[in-house]
Length: 383
Image (cartoon, rainbow, N blue to C red; front, side, top):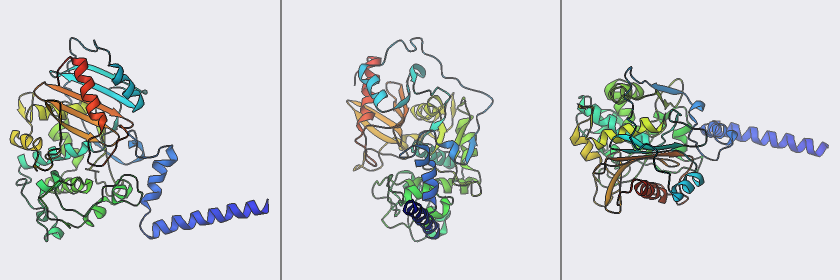
């Protein structure tokens, strides 16, 4: 018994020393991350994690622009394959919008059409839309404006705001989602996100090639906030959330209650129907109910590959061909998707707990093709 007591005391002492060392060497965010993830029974960031963070509210307007319900709403059952993958991969929302009307929708695991879940990196597409809006509003000159105009410490680099949006920044950033010591983990759980980002140097020639880096979008968000003098949540609310008639307020996760910097690279909590509005906005070349919310030339550029060698990415949006069809999409960790085929006037939204097991940073996973193929089978459309 005495041995057991001594062992427990030693273990407690070792743990205490480790915790102290983490804080001493500025890795205290790991403790915060462990509390949020592991102490809640998860193995990674999870889709309904927003209550564990500080948030800004993205306010909806007084006028709600409800999605019309298609005359054939839910008239088709999900295919056998779709039903299986939705169960296996933890889908919580699957929606097909046809000709701007909700043609099919189904929710799982206790979630509904108003449940708030994490966009993860779909927020990158939304942040890029805010860049387009800031250019349209005159806060930012163009895609070619140097980031050093906003942060002089980057005067040695030639990186532009367009380079940030198109993932060609040249930043010294390692995109890693499992290591607690990675800069990506620090960005998600640290209490001073600006410090983390501004410590990243430009180490490669910018504007030459695609490299998916969350830090690029975070720095872009910081520039938009600095240029407009408005928080990202307020600018998003006035620029898109209200004009597009979002049905619900949304939340944008912040780094800390004192700094209150939004995580531009991730973490807008909303629902399938409201996320889908950005798919419709880009499908319709930046126009909503006859009003040009976003410059059509910017939209076109966003959904066109910047680099011939990287046809999968434009400015903030992913691009993928399936069969003879050309899709553009918002993508997020664990399989959050808004997928658009403008010629067929189809928007597919999938939200859920995980994606297919062939995961890889900056790579298309098989589940995306499955969600597209099965939707087209239900619609009886050719691919």
